[in-house]
Length: 522
Image (tube, rainbow, N blue to C red; front, top):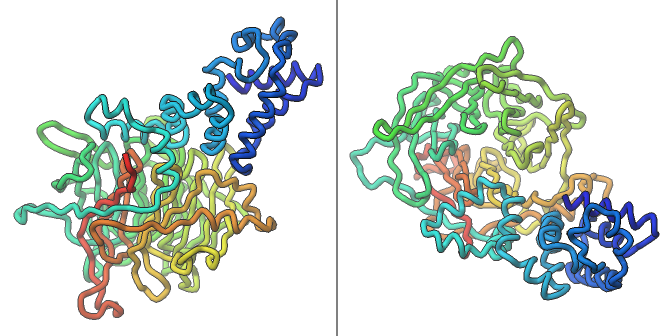
């Protein structure tokens, strides 16, 4: 609606060569985040002053269909609140706060909880906001959520707090330690499947635990008898709406898989949790068999995979997308051809960051080198393209530790990527947490020929301070985030042995489940 209003203003005033509102429209629709907040506030106030003449809009008011926001005045202050509200929702956080500096009326509107809850929904999604609200059990607490303060804290989060989620009853059966498994949050449940175990053995067991809104409670795992898929590790499993989509993996004989499975979780009041799997019909076209690849969902019906280890131990560099049918009975694979594209690798991460974009990070390359490059895949109807984002490690505090393989990379609240653990080229495992802020990165500005493009991404990396429980260093663990995007669950992985941690024989598999909470002062 506000775009229509602004365009209609531009059309009317271009005819009369009226510059102030054109300046306002240009300012509102320009990349304001590139301007200092004080400059934006000055520009807003200058435009308001220019439009203070009561007759400014008079000729337009007689013919425009948008006269409801004029009311006989011509300044921006005469715009109806709902129109200003809609315009503000086009702006980034700093620009909204700058707008609030122009006058008392705008300060009240631009700092209201109603506006900032809408801004949170715009930038975080309805699911995350609704999940955050449901974590407050009291209606009065929900009503008093300080949305503007919450938004600022999410954008500047600098620490996490870890909690060990162990079942105190020794008589209960728990999942055995493992690595290269899958862990997903779906329908309010954690679902764990497969993985590798000591001696190179594969696992085919499925476990689930209901989380709901009780993120820090002691959890009771339930083993689910499904019978399928077969045992494997190094597979991928992603959530598409309320379904699990599993692809590939390696069994204990070294065989690579190329099958695609669809799983659905059901909650029963008396029987607990059940999970049904079905082998998805994908026709005659599917990716070559592989394991240790990366995958994520993109949009509500697609999954993208990249790379991995194929037949004869060859690392792959191909990209494939599967699109599920509306009834989820079959899927169609097709290969993405893009130049340039990420080099061959395994043990990397692929994470959905929007309806049309996924981000790839790290992994181990053809020469067994450990990587730290970043690529973004754009997927739209009839068009797919990889774009590399460049940055310089030496300009990032402690950035020398960023290259890694076997890490987890999860999309958290606020459009950020939370990276945890992994190992370096010497197989030294890590316990660090990093955030990459990709929420407002303009990929067009990341072209390698631009002198400041590397510096722009450098400022988006931030190492988080860990608090609370101290989980050990690990790699090839798995992590997933709940619906709010604030709570991360981490299970298993390979950790250092007790005697000779630097030797392969000193490795051991871990069976620990712990929670990572973004520290926000609510």
